[in-house]
Image (cartoon, rainbow over the protein chains, first blue to last red):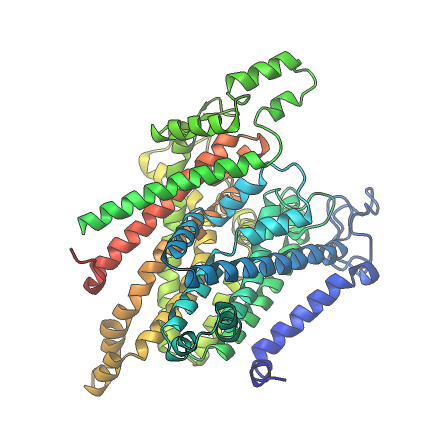
Length: 277
Length: 324
């Protein structure tokens, strides 16, 4: 194992974060096998509506007598998958645009960075509402593509800044003078140098992406029903939460724990990969 | 400096124009059109549908619609709201003060809490206080803002019953109150949404201020101040914090769009009659131009906020002032 990974794993923070992410991912992947109930089955509308947490239903049931624990486990599948896939897409796009801006000359740089400025001037949630609001059915691939394509702006700035500072360094200029082709420069010199900051940003990005996805589904523009999603569970709880606090509390805790785990991991990675911080 | 402000203003207009174009294109990529919610009803005869589409110019080629939209925008006309039956500009203008009130209150709370906490952390980096506060700010940084709002509603509003949980004023009694009562009524309604927005913002401010202070602590002039034998208090307030506040001004500009995003969710939770609530309502009614208009207005606010941050930066640090 590389010394960096060992250094990261040695901190309590990172161990807690890794543990939490492992449990959450495990629960999400294995949900069809270990979830106690079908997440969309209305178990007993007469007797089990808004049942408080008990031994049979650890986290209680919702307004339609569906088991909350099962719904949260299935909701984790959506949250984690959408966040991981869209962050991957955004890292790929951001790196490509950042490289193009940093290496492509003044005109390309100016054009791309103005585009980024423009995109960053619209608050992210409002941008997402603009893009997603008028689709009648939002599928997972659509959500992943839209979230990924609206969140690469910061990564592209990060990569561009790293590229620009690398270009000033003696080893880089020596390699250029020696006639190294651009593709080789990118592969051998640029990418290894920007990998650290990108990994940190991506890890923190997964947490923030989970928040954004939850916010969208809270507003009713997330994955189509009846697929359980954490944000919509909270939205639906608003009508009944005065008498059934658990319907609002537990889905929120699920989001909090997941985002906290990724934020902790991101911070630990930053401490290990970036000695300045 | 005036010339630079003018140049930046011109850039800001260009950005707003680009935002308008992009949102126009994005919305027209999505299937359906604004009359759909009206025309989906089986009772609407086909010729009425066609007439509606003609009235709103929706049967024209997309390029023509775009040209007309941008032309109108140049004269300050943001289009027509199908749901509110009035100009989009008027509908948004009515909501802007509420959103500004909420975000400014949120920024003040975020700044007032986040900056001292972050500064303390940076100053005492590695201490127990630092660790505790790091975990606390990470906790709030990871909270879904709408859920925090709901929990505060449950706890402070509905649970203890000391604060109102929805709206900007009491619709029944507000007008009959004396002026002091009206001010209190507004303040009481503002408190929970502003705290919700401010707490999440404070976490971001604290995280940022911690590293800014940490950077400043390591500077030569701090070492010099210490070498001169100055009191710790003087080193902190006169030397370190002044230098560490500069990046915070930039953060001011950067947090604005984040708080506006947060405001959409907080306004929804607390039924706060602002721009965010308007955009969410207009999704259901497929009110195209309200959505585009809100995006344009919020982008303008962000661009102006960034410009303001730049000017403040020039005032605070003369070295960064553009010469000429």
